[in-house]
Amino acid sequence: MKNKKKTTKLIRIFSLITIALVFLFLILLVVQINFKKLFGEFNKEEKMFVIEDKCSIMMGNIIHEIKDGDRCKIMCKNECSVRKMSFLNFSFIWKNDSCHVCNCYCR
Image (cartoon, rainbow, N blue to C red; front, side, top):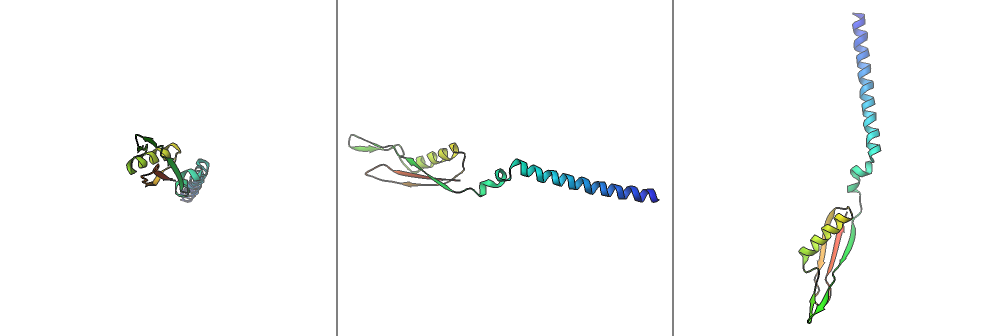
């Protein structure tokens, strides 16, 4: 009877030590992986990039590379992707007498 109590007590102590070591291992693993990589996406600053509309005059009309908001959005998504950032938003400013303005917001 006395041996049985000792073995159950040893099993409990061994279990607690094993759980503590596994927990410590997981903490060290998260630190090693770099905590910022796991949760850094939420803390990144929003950045704005301007995509230039290369326009030219042909037969009295202005020809635009970025013709409308949909084209601006596609170019913004591509720009964010190239910079390994996530796309947030865009703004497109239509100008009749000069080149359009396309602003991209990435995080």
